Image (tube, rainbow, N blue to C red):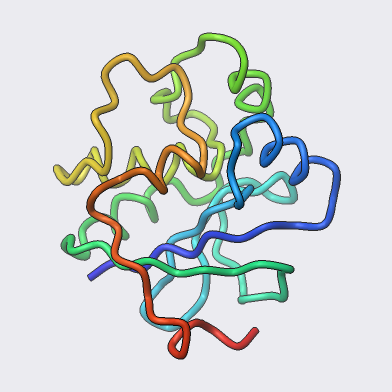
Length: 148
């Protein structure tokens, strides 16, 4: 099982992503077995980070093999894709693995590992809201959500 953590931040970028994608979340990370988070953020690109406090955090599980995590780990050190913010309203190829937006890294890792969360054909961007629409996500019960 793979766990995804959806969250919101307090800054203007978080507000913009939520506002223009009609989403309750502005960010998504893969949760590693040790509880650390693997994802792409503007402050360092693709990296492994310690869990931190966010105003809203919700976790979902996906029945998929660990090779999804291994695939995402291959992207460590890649820069954040600032053009993806503009890609919310413009057409662009979200699958170029030279830089990443959080939700695009997650979608790409699942797809590259042979377990796509979405039908990516026709998508010019992937946002946290798009991932929330995946039929493969199962909510983690409220009592098991992280106390961060």
